[in-house]
Amino acid sequence: MTYIIILAAVMVVGMIGMGWFYQIVDKDQH
Image (cartoon, rainbow, N blue to C red):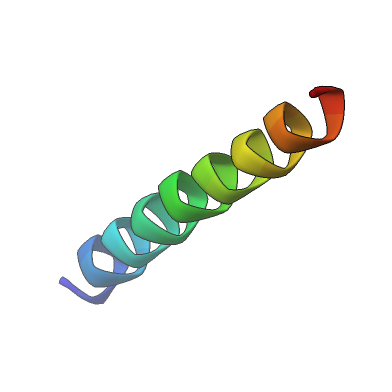
């Protein structure tokens, strides 16, 4: 059951990271 928690944490961190990276790229283009 530990791998489920790790997988969920990785998915959450990945989503936040991609959203943050997208904002930086979008802000840099304008």
